Length: 492
Image 1 (cartoon, rainbow, N blue to C red):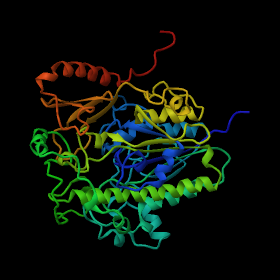
Image 2 (image 1 turned 30 degrees about the vertical axis):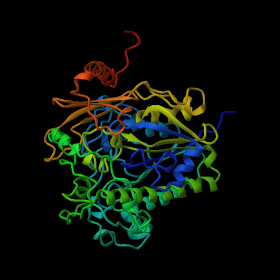
Image 3 (image 1 turned 120 degrees about the vertical axis):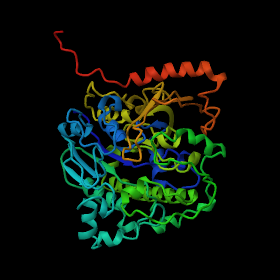
């Protein structure tokens, strides 16, 4: 008799940095649910996203393929290519009951999103949570018809870059958990896969007031910054990013008055003035709410006897600059705060527990890992490498890949980003090389000696041989992300 296939809870926060979990070293935020998940499973301390922008990142981990192969580089793309197969479609075809709650963001999601062949039987979609950013999305329906709250009136005062948002009881993250509990407690004969994708801790920074009150902004350490960062960032003025001018994040400031009320524009364009520590406190408050709401889902799994045979994946699509080097939000930069993400796997019945792995891993590795965990074949077109041997104790827990990559290609868009920048990063666990294709500037960092990424060795004469070696490695790594296309005919 074959073992029962596991359920899969795939929880993906939006824009959560790697250094935001207490069990992994963040002393200024409480994350008991994520700490408990680390204790029950494997936390990858060096996990990297394939892009620092939502759509290309999500396309990568849902296909197990790199951007250079699936070609979904842009936020706001008109459609998702029909020939790219999502791992959730594979699970649905194998008999899994699949559901999605929250974001999908594989194509433009201004007011609605064209669904690809995603395999989700239940599809409760909510991109930006505000009523001005979607038309009748499922979170808005819940507010209006179940909570008896007018969504427009609820969100009318929430029009700032950083400040209090809606109460926790009405928050989109709370809605995600309530819908998740309904899905996992449905009566069914076979296994299920549930994607839970809240919008937080994506900007704007608008945690519930009761969560903001839990964190003292003045007690937080300032972002990574040296005075030289202000001048250093001027060399990147032509590179696409949401922050165009670096500011000293150590200076406490009064926020600029609200000019634009549309939630998605507030979320992508920082004001001229903001307080970096208030932003950080609000960001941490959003993560604390996520932790509380994630706990509700896990508690439900335990109460219904499903926890032992459920694979849980907790991750993010990319990070957030959060004031590091005087920058905020995201764009074509490859600092650790932006490309280095949390990733935790748990399956009490089968996986190692309490392990913090130093292996280099990527988000493209998630799809083949889940397929193998469920006993399903991994398509040859998938480029990620399964983590299952490491998770089950059959491989060195601290060795997986020699290098990880990330890529940005015209990924933001809009008139304020006319350069259509193409940049790529390769990190080998010590040295990081960044190439801005078509530009003279580049970056090389030795993270062993310079973990804050302050000392760019790109133009250092003493690092010439290192630069040549790293650029050869960079070329090899990026070319390895390009698919060879359809399989060769058997009778070739």
